[in-house]
Image (cartoon, rainbow, N blue to C red; front, side, top):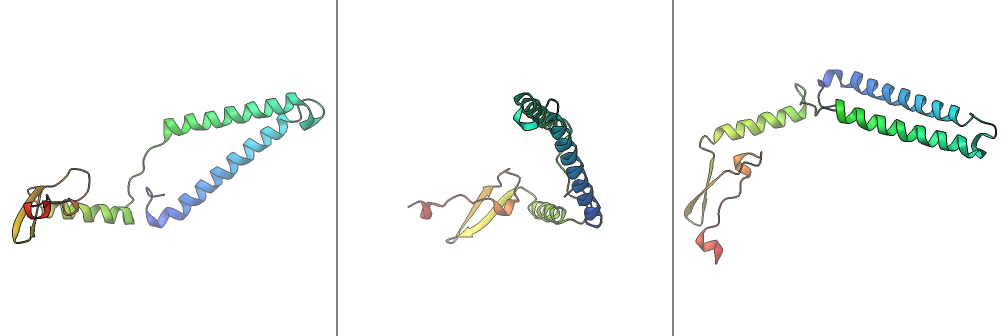
Length: 133
């Protein structure tokens, strides 16, 4: 739900719920129909096997569809995720050389920022000789 703007998130949520309910109805109705292929409904092993294999195929089909069509969503304009991303970008542009300086115990320590996707302020400075003892 993060790839839609906040003002349309209600519609997107409703569409997701409708798809979920329709899929559940189709799966259960087909499975119930398979249980009545031969007499004795659930007591007949053939009916239960047919229903079971249908459910296995249905789950496999859904897994394949997810693997093919699933895309990671982008942060929608105005969402909290986009605001965090903008803040992180601003923090990264404040540090032009990609280094982080701090003063510890009277000596200045400079360590390169780590490229972990976090801002330079989150990088851990190197230990000084005083701290190592």
